[in-house]
Amino acid sequence: MTLRQVVLGAGGVETTALGFGCANLFRLGDSAQRARLLGAAYDAGIRHFDVAPMYGLGRAEAEVGRFARKRRGEVTLATKFGIEPTVFARALGRVQGPVRRTLEALPAIRQQARETAAGPGSGHLGAMLYSAEGYDGAAARRSLERSLRALDTDYVDLLLLHDPAPGSVRSDEVRCYLEEARRAGWIRSWGVAGEAGPTVAVAHSFGHSVPVLQLRDDAFVRSLRYSELTAGAYITFGILGKALARVVEYVRADSTRRRRWSALVSADCGEPEVVAPLLLRAAFHENSSGVVLFSTIRQRHIHDAVVAAQIAPDSADQALDSFLTIMDAELTAHKTTEDHR
Image 1 (cartoon, rainbow, N blue to C red):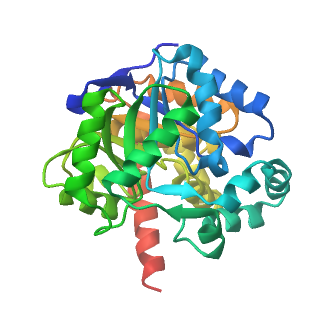
Image 2: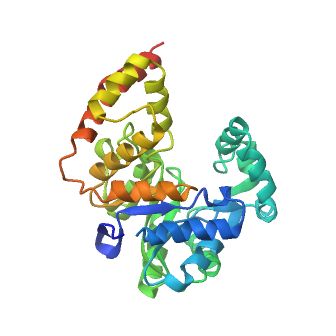
């Protein structure tokens, strides 16, 4: 399949409008499964792959690098710096298969583990697994050198500051190093990635337009619409994470509501397989000139995401318009009521 191409700002990085996020790659039990998943994304037309040193407890970059080795000129590799796995995490990473299989069988515990180990500031477990190396020139250099070795490549297309907090970045020093790395050919472009509020604040600290901003976004958050942004290009992520469950649970909670939504959209909005493509299509409308990141461990979901990406963002989409209208009218009002209880 051929996906729509976008150019990420003045850096000239050309890639696909749909990108594949590798944060969940190690939820698959062995390297052969992970290689097949990455291969399926590539065969479906996806050329943008997003990874970070902390993913897979320090092992994801190497797996993505093996996948990309024979395709290097055809794929865009984005990685990050600022958060690294600890020595304990790297040791655990070598035997993480049985732990992850246990967590997959226990959804409630799995979700709790994810929330308390999302990063170095997310809880005791997060602090055990990840360390914030800092956001200065020396930290950026060390992390990039490690990532180049792990990915087994001479350059990365995009290097992003990973979840920096406002006030934590030596902006002039970091910009100086990243521009030096760009001129040397070690990176093609750079940017800042994370939650919208802190990420935009950090971007402003650079004083000049940041080449790329990578922001958490979904049909409720709408970071690109409501944030004061200054960047050459935008990547959005987290499109399905919370929004998909929120919509499906709300629709399923009332049979009359489910029939009403389904009649308006001409599909059963109580089914995740119906709602997920709609949320992705909404994301492409919001970020029509950038990249929308998508993550899954199921090959069949890749095909659905690619189909959603192939619909031109400026084309008429009556089902999507109806879906967004009823979602805004009912779920926004529902959330406001819940917030005031």
